[in-house]
Amino acid sequence: MALVPDNTLITGTPEEGRELALKMARLVVKATQPEEATRARLRPGYAESADSLIAVAHVVAVEFATIAAANDYWRNS
Image 1 (cartoon, one colour):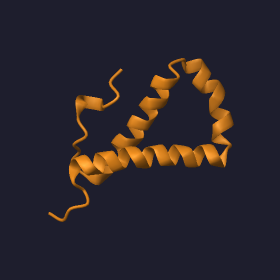
Image 2: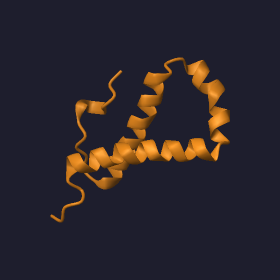
Image 3: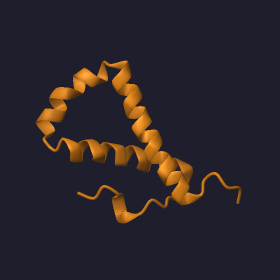
Image 4: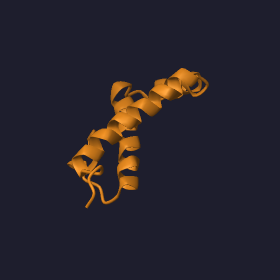
């Protein structure tokens, strides 16, 4: 399983970077818990937990910060 799709963090736009961040966060969950049935069983519990949803958002934000750094999104061209 490739944890960095296409082996690059470089994206064409910030929107593509955000999509990549979400995909990478999902891949981390899949790598951490490879059993699909277990992930499906656990999903309702965290889907109803504000703390769990905030934690997910944090993971995506950290992934996006890494991608943004790789793409120099904060710099004016």
